[in-house]
Length: 239
Length: 328
Image (cartoon, rainbow over all chains, first blue to last red; front, side):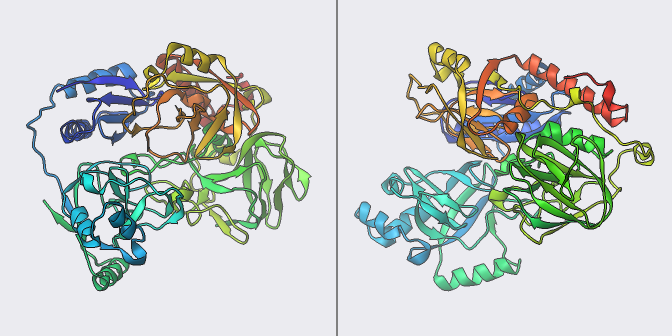
């Protein structure tokens, strides 16, 4: 393992840095450590929050001291292994590309001198890694965008981008999980809600999941949207 | 039971409790009362659980019609509370009757006041909390700030912690010396942040020796500060990581932002410092145009202060008369 640096984040947070780079290997240490911490169920720990290369743990200092927590986390850290295997989910996310649901698709195609079909094919091909969830409820920070699609943000951000919009910003791609202002280039939309506050799992994606986009027709979009509304849509998850 | 009908919602009135714990890994922040200190004191005065939901009001308070007899406490900022247009005291339980009109006048001190109700406000739990998180439209009253004609329910006396506090007719109040002082809190204690090392020693010194003015662009998400710019000497991009309440982020223009209750769960700006838990309410009560400065303390010191505050709360919890408390 490359590094294990423990630092406070305020007086109720403890942050472990596992290597200051964005890479699937370091990120897998983050998730591994997160699982070890959750399994250990240490009294006083309130939240375990993975990010790209850091794991942050929120705790109640009335129940557990910083030093004692640091000691226990360091001990768990010694168990991390690069060969550790665990089940990751791969979620297939249906997307209608272009049209009014993807108003910047043509711009991106022109920007890179590609055909619209090329852009769709290049975007839907990779298996993306959800490094972490953040920015807004259920928003996946994805890694794996093909460099050929890297495009600067819009010069004038939109006041409202609808939930489900799939976008590109620089070398990142992502899916808006709630309606919000935003400057990403929008290439399509998924009818599947990423944020479902009344479900037991309030978000479709969790840190560590894989994601693959699947290009669908307008008719398929409408029928999936309807199934989602009626609560009968089954997300395609491959283990 | 029905307790309030909204006649005028005020500037920004939301249902809050102590927040939604356990969902930051899903990108969902706790939200909750910005001044958690006043909020908890107010609930304890009513004999409520400390987390019982109440209304957070901002600068311009609402006008509410009372729909059932009950006890309430107004805590936090002094926004000139009135009952049927007559001034009423804060930090003391007030009996209100069906048909009364609760209102507010000119803001006197502080930014946020709390209307706490016997038993707590009753709205559906979303992920274990009643706190309103407007950005995600969850919690509270339909996931939004109150509007005209909304009717708010409360639990009645169900959520009370002790029977004896209810049966005693003695009006519970808190001595002036134990109420939060909203005027004298311009020095905010902080712990160094995880990216302090991205700043030079001179810049760090500048941060601790300067006074920052709170910008008008300050809300439940964060307080933007104006003052000595904190420019990083190394321009390395940092990798997005978790942020928390009180995290002081420094964007590239060098003007710090203190993240508050409705922040995001993660951020990509370096955090030079983090406000300690017991001082968050002080920031929450400062007004745009007022100033803040920062003082470094250790994690141990922050925890000692938190423990002291917990002791005060638990003493109030068992119903010891409030005036025996000295100023904390």
